[in-house]
Length: 78
Image (cartoon, rainbow, N blue to C red; front, side):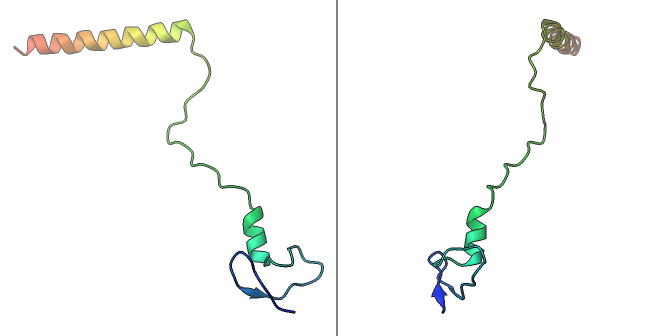
């Protein structure tokens, strides 16, 4: 007995003992039951741990030093 798939419209022969519904082919059934694809991983994976106060202050100090160096370089170039 030939059946027509309700999803893709392809005619198929349902086989007893195989997974699938009576009106859905095996390919459509397996495609529907596949897990959703994983989202792509970001290029830069950052640590999600909370930052300590020491880390924050060190970053602020580094940025301030960079700003001072850039300002000095601009002042010297005049």
